[in-house]
Image (cartoon, rainbow, N blue to C red; front, side, top):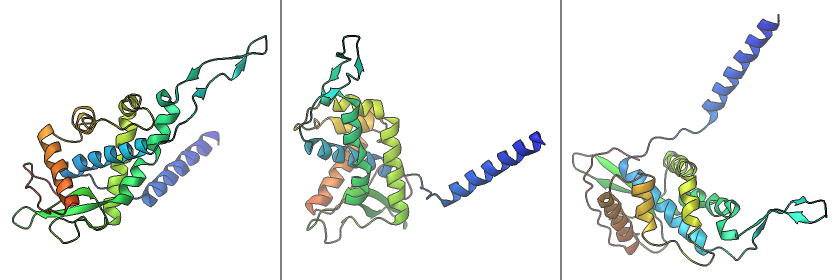
Length: 219
């Protein structure tokens, strides 16, 4: 009887897990363009979050009392704390999915390719590479990728943030260093530069998008 109960419980658990997975949104894998520009978008929003920080008190970890009734432990500089890193990165992916759109481009023979770029009011609206609103599937893919990137590269991101105090900004070389060398979101420095220039061109209203060198499908 005990064995039967255990087996039934296991079956119920499997069915429940399967049902839950069916209810969760699925995310298509991003293309090379999608991964590279998603990483750039994430670092850009991380930079904005850092620049918007307000001064904070150091983190007091003196939670225990010694026999004399004095608090013991240490105080951690706020900008070096794990709490600060968690707070700064917390809303980054949400900001990316809200502020970015998709740029469509053709690559001959009807092939469509896409990458992410920030949507700016009053800029890049007259066709020629203007970012459009993401579909639900594209937004889900971007959010899943961004969340996964932050989780996988948590230590690297925290190390980067420790080099920047409140009121300062991430150095400009951090974008390429993180997306190419640390996270491998961009295949090469050349690809990083190519899409970085494309994103800037869209924001400036220039519209033209250089033809990528590596084949890919959609986001």
